[in-house]
Image 1 (cartoon, helix red, strand yellow):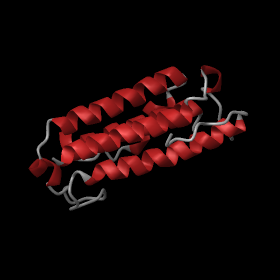
Image 2: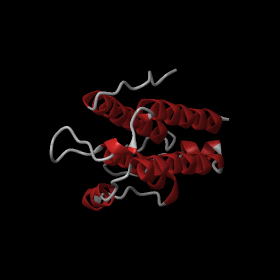
Image 3: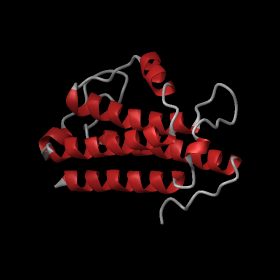
Image 4: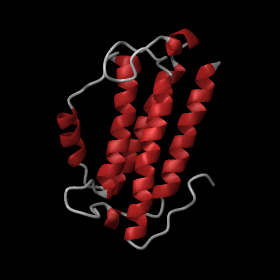
Length: 156
C-alpha cells in the first residue's frame, strides 16, 4: 500500500531533521543570526507547526488555515529547544497516525480548489512538508555553524 511508503518518508524526514539539530543545545534556543529572524527554537517549532498544518488541511479539516499571522504568533512563543524538539516529534508522530488510518482511495482524493496545491492528490502534501522541513533543516545547519557547531550529515 502507498501509505507505508509515505510513513517511511516521514520517518526519513524525522531522522534527517534530528541529525541536523542534534548538535544544538538549550543554550542555542534563542540564537538568531539577525534580529527579526526566527530563533533556533522558532525554526524547529515552525517546521513542526507546518507538518500539522499540512496534515490538518489535507486530511482532517480538509481546508488550509490561511491565518498565517496567528500561526506565526503561536510559533514565536516557543523559546525552548526542548519544547520545540518535542513539538516536532509530536507532529511527525501525529502525521504518521493520520496516514495509518487512511486507505489508498482517501490518500489519492484530490485536494480542494484553493491556493494550496489545488487538485493534486492529498498524499502529495507529504512531499511538500518534506521539502519545507528540508528548507528549515538547512537553515538550522547554518545556524549551528554560526554558533560554532558542526551538524551531523543528515543522511547518515
